[in-house]
Amino acid sequence: MAFTVVAHYHCAPADAPAVREALLGMREATPAEPANLAYEVHAEIDRPGSFVLYERYTGRAGFEAHKETDHFAELIVRTVFPLLSERTVTFAEVL
Image (cartoon, rainbow, N blue to C red):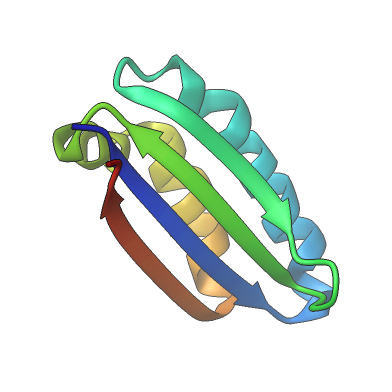
């Protein structure tokens, strides 16, 4: 059963360009992962510095493998996470 992740990230508007660049880097790298089915990055229109990520994997194990990649460590853990003031993540199974 497919596994979906919806993440909401918020940073200061001044940090938005750096977060955007890192998330677009993730959008480039993640589709090459064998278990990835979708990786979409959205910028919220009415909330500067806010982003929504929609990710879909073949299963939970695929998402866990995603978190172990070098690009996740560099772009998300070391670049994006330190700039966030708010982060929520929802995990779901595709029906």
